[in-house]
Image (cartoon, rainbow, N blue to C red; front, top):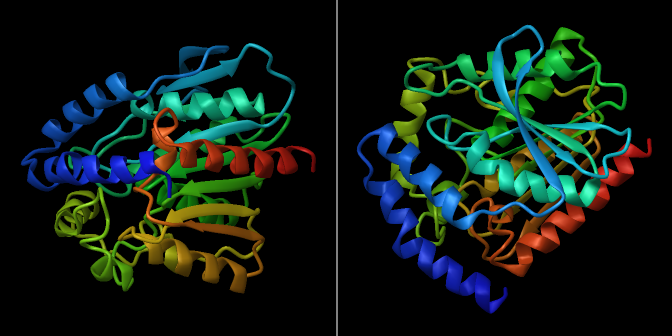
Length: 299
């Protein structure tokens, strides 16, 4: 772990983790995350941003296009935020760095958030967004982080169940795959995790699920069927409370015959690629992911 990552962990533990633990209303978290993203996350040069509407769905989205774009796959990226906060704006800088590295266009849909729009609003919107882009000539690569990563995996399972055109692949940063929170790391890493407060997870789940069984595979893709699914790339850190969400998800996918790449890093914060301008580990992860995406685009 780099010195910068060590310092970042300490800062997150003293600031962001406390804010996440103490915020009383979703509106507080939304304002804080949007403000922090504007201050700390900056896109690279050589990319263009455009507000678009996806197909006939009237779903708002942000499209990121590199100036040297080639005819190639499209990245459909679903942002994280516990299904409660976050937006394309909070994640577009990170995705823009991936766009600049790969030369691929990306679309970040504005899916509905809880508690105003509880389950199954997010997964319905994810399906709508995918249907709008699934016939892209070069194919589609799904991506997401945290709750958005779980949403990507739930969408991947739904694509198979509905018989839709498969994406080329799917990648996830620190995905939330089990809304029952039954993984051992959820308790074992509660103190070690520098960002996520474990004590707020069930409250977040209640806002999103609104009485739905947390074991529903559309909410917890850990319990979904992925037979015939496209390749999956995932990463998480060994100190995250969601570590076992990734490890058990990887095992389940492999048992069902899916081509899986699972990378576990040491002592990094939740969704560390967001910190692309701060820690070298974020840039290294983005470079590794770029190589995987490039291999898919050559299929």
